[in-house]
Image (cartoon, rainbow over all chains, first blue to last red; front, side, top):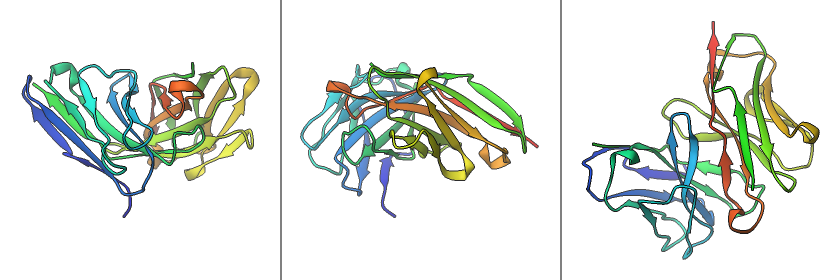
Amino acid sequence: IAGITQAPTSQILAAGRRMTLRCTQDMRHNAMYWYRQDLGLGLRLIHYSNTAGTTGKGEVPDGYSVSRANTDDFPLTLASAVPSQTSVYFCATRQGASMNTEAFFGQGTRLTVV
Amino acid sequence: AQSVTQLGSHVSVSEGALVLLRCNYSSSVPPYLFWYVQYPNQGLQLLLKYTSAATLVKGINGFEAEFKKSETSFHLTKPSAHMSDAAEYFCAVSGARGSTLGRLYFGRGTQLTVWP
């Protein structure tokens, strides 16, 4: 079934460690996004990519980096994890970076930083 | 800048009762608005979207929403709640210009509980 695959599903990580969350899509969508979801705060955009080879910062980019080497993959890296990065992370895609297309979401990665 | 505000972080209804989840938007241009649903331990899925074609938008699972420009609202309704509707619901607005184009800005979510 076509869609978005996130890995790992969940992870417990020691503070200070480096971690990469993987996101792969097979829908050939141009735009990809990383959100974090925290209780009472909804979803906040970390980084985005409107097309392969380009990336941009969202609302809460500090402590995170992304790359977009090709259309299908959009990994999110935590260079040195801190407890405040404990969250559920969602990768999403859109057909194009336009206003009226819907976003599709992965199943999420639950990250706990201890 | 675009933003949405969801009024009420928790809503409880009895099975068979009307569901009303409130969303107000702020946008300097005609907005594109979305409602998403999230079931436990899952990602978000689209319920419906408003893209200016019609002010009353029908979505999946019997939900609908009405765009009211005068009230800057896009409330989600369902005439009769079902136990399976229990989930978290998010309103979102699409970024309209410049560096915000294509981004989705989400509200904080409303948790819907349905009592038998």
